Structures are given as structure tokens and as C-alpha cells.
Length: 436
Image (tube, rainbow, N blue to C red; front, side, top):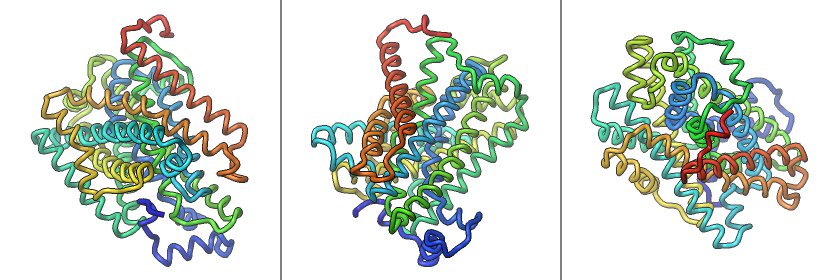
């Protein structure tokens, strides 16, 4: 089984402990739960990448708390599909891209691969730009220098992968912790109207067509195509269940980790919108760029708040770039059966980001556009995942329940409809009459 995941190994001690838990020879508890943690933590960083910063800042600054419900909805969809992706790897021992290559006609496979590669490039564009913007602002560097530093840091962290699962998971988990801590701190600094937060988190509203565009970008930034592919690979051979009972236990631990990891990612995303709304909406609703947000935060909330914002953005850019490379390798190997060196993979996907900067394109706007591209690519892995996980010949007793099937199909349909609306809007169809 030639996958990125299968090249990684757990230590003998960790493997023995996990097998003891699965066999019922070891008590449960936090230590046992932590043995199974890792895949969802790595996948969750995709839900806190710089694209989220760009779209959430625009959502909060322009529309206040109004689009919080979109963030919540997108996060619930993400939980569902990451859980399905993890289940696919655990039950079948293959990842989503491999199954696509095996089950679909060759022209469809190449088309899906092409779409997924475009999505990978859009992902890298967001990640490199985000990290580079933060570094350039924090240390007063040229944007190109910030991108170069981000590229080097990403490559160095990827070298940890050679030492097995745990070192990479610890590094990514630490960076996730930094992002979460930064936004927890921001919540104590920004003046938040918690009543409005609670209202708009559950009551849908769509102020205008611009809000619709930002909403689609939020979905594209939250439910990530490469993360759906990656999660199935991270679980497929990390530890194999030897029978149905052990696979059920693995699924139980996996589902718990998905809920916790993505709940944290969702709270971070909501905190981004809340911070932007609290700081900018009343008097600075025109803030639409990360650079402007940083410079505006300094007089509004102080230099400390602005610095914390940049530290979280750097952590996001570097860690999500690492995860994007891992996913890109898995997608390429799964669809077309070969892999390329990590340094070449990084080079291929980061070139568009350097071109965008060299051309002088507005960095934050490029981030938002990249998230729209991701949203347009998203139905490909979603549809494939729904098709596979509802097939009894592939999943056996672990086939989707009727409720899961309906939820997954409805979520996929919503994404497809949002994309169609976005395309209509892009081609000049007036969508203002749909605002509520």
C-alpha cells in the first residue's frame, strides 16, 4: 500500500498500547484516548488557515455578527464529512483518492485529479500569502521575503514526517494550540456583544449579494477539499482494526476526536468573525484586508492585540502549508499512482502564490478568491465520499445509516447550489432579490 500514511509508523510501544486498548486489556481514560488522537488534529488545521482569516475578517467587518450562522453551518458540515472520510480509511484500508482511481472511469479520474490539483494550488496560495503577510507586517519585511521564510519553515516541519506520526502530530497540534490561545486572548480584549453573537449564530440572514459571496467563501475556507482527501489517508493504515469489533472502537475514538478537534476549529473561526465585528463593524466596516485589519487593530485594541493577531496568522500559514503538502502528495499518489519528492511538490504548488505576489495582486482579495475556488472544487470529494460510504459492498456493516446518508446528501446539495448561485452572480445575474 503505497501511500503517504503507510510510510509513517508508530513506535512499538504506542502500537502495543493501542492494540491493548482495542483488545480490552487496558482501561479507558484520557491516556487511552490520546493514543488514538492525531488524524483529526492534523486535518483541523485546514479549517483555520489564512483563507479563513481573510473571509472572516471581511464577514465581521462588513456584516457584523450576521454571518456567524454560516460559520456554524459550515463547521457542522465539516464535522460530518471529516468523520466520513476517517471512516472510509479505517474500514476499507484505502484512501478516498485511491478508491476514486479504482472505482471510476479513467477520464473521470483524470478530471477529478485536475480539479483537486487546482484546489491544492488555491490552498497553497492562501497559506503562503497568509504567512507571508503576517511575517512582513510583524518584522517589516518585503512580502516576497515573508513568502520565502514561510516556504523554508514549511519544508523544515515536513522533515519531521520521516520520524513517524507523532512528531508531526505534536508540531501541528502545538501550532493549533497557539492559534486557539491567540483568539481566546483576543476575546478578552475586544468588546463583544454576546447577545448578538448568540442570536446570529442560530438565526440565518443574508443582507445582500456581497454577503452571499462572502458566505460561499466562508464555506470554501471551512470545508476544505484537501482535508477530506487527507483524513482518509491518515486513518487508513495508522493502526488497522483486526476485526469488526476493533474497527467499531477505532471509529468511536475517531468520531470523538473529529468532534473535539473541529469544534475547536469552529470556535476559532467564530472568534475571528466576532473579533472583526467587535473591532471594525461600527466605525471601520470598510476593512477588507489583513494588512488594514492589523494597522486598524493597533489604535483600537492596542499593539498587543495586533501582535497576537499576526502570531496566530503566522502559525496558521506555516501549519496549514505543511498539511496542504501532505494532502497534495496523497491526492497525486492516489489518483495517478506516483509520488514526487516533497521539495518538488512544494515548488509546484507554491509557484502560483509567488506569481500572484510578483504581479502585485491585492493579497487579501487573492485569499478570498482562492477560497471561492476551493468551494467550487469541494463537490468533487464530497460526492465521491457520499457514494463510497453508502455502498455496502465497500463498507459492509459500517455503511452509512439512513440519517447520515440524508444529512450528507443534503449538505452536498447545499454546497452545489451555493456554487451555482455564485457562478450566476459572477456572470452578472442580480442576486439582490434573494437577500433576506
